[in-house]
Length: 395
Image 1 (cartoon, rainbow, N blue to C red):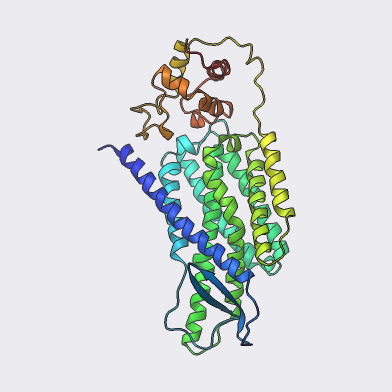
Image 2: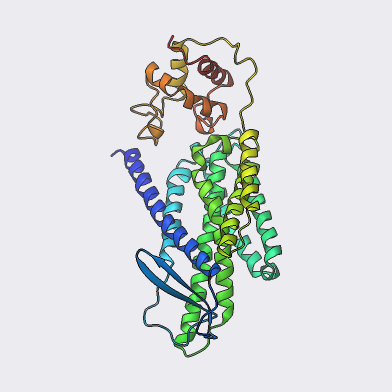
């Protein structure tokens, strides 16, 4: 039984589920945040109604109202929004376990960062997932939770600490996914541990003929707002593994924070736009941050590369066969790899030349081999880069 092959299918199907449920959750979250921000005073003067909105979509008109606390009577049918969030986390965590915990020595551990056994990396990863939520939740429930300004500063400090610690424990790739998984865990825990329980208590109070406690609405709103600002940074972290120029930087934890800041600023622009107070300063600052990163992360020219001796194709093929083709081959020999990642085959000179420019990016950022599991030497890396810089000659 080829476990690696079935693991690839599990990877694909869980990733697909993660995308589907993530889109559903983010879409619902963005919709209700936008709805809240665009409510107008009720025209009928109902004192229980906070605001209302008329809209048109899909060829039909909609009339929506939000109550200050609750309506006079509980409706027979009440729609809940929770499973989108739950299944996004379930699928994302399953994917994280399948790839990063099951192959911790390859994707989570980088001896150049911290040489530790795979089991220790998994334990550290789990501790950060749980610890991130515990610290965040305690902050929200403390006196800081009553002051959004101070709470926001505390949350930024928490993110800075998490990014710094993760990037000094794990490989760059693993660290970015770790922070993304931790943030995603905080977001879904907000739903499962605060928003939904509070809503249940409000419904139970109404069924008992009592007025619901408005504090549950306040707490739910607070956590929902936090989630909306975390969404764009988390989306970046989920796709960051495809771009080694970000996680491969020596200052990768600063890059992570800068991109997170840019994402939050973009989200702030849309929130203010929905409130009728659009301010282009926010996306402008985000653009400056991103452009600054683009230039700051440009690989420094390797000394002597242009004048270095260009290795023969036979030597290039020998290096790639030993250091790269264990995974990037029609029939990979590396344990746990059933198919060449991204379909990149380096079995013969024609294929090696075809992927030369892609190899250059991975080699310059030292993202490949991941964690340098095949022990590519600096000299071998320099030889391959010299060959690519010379135009990847066939001889």
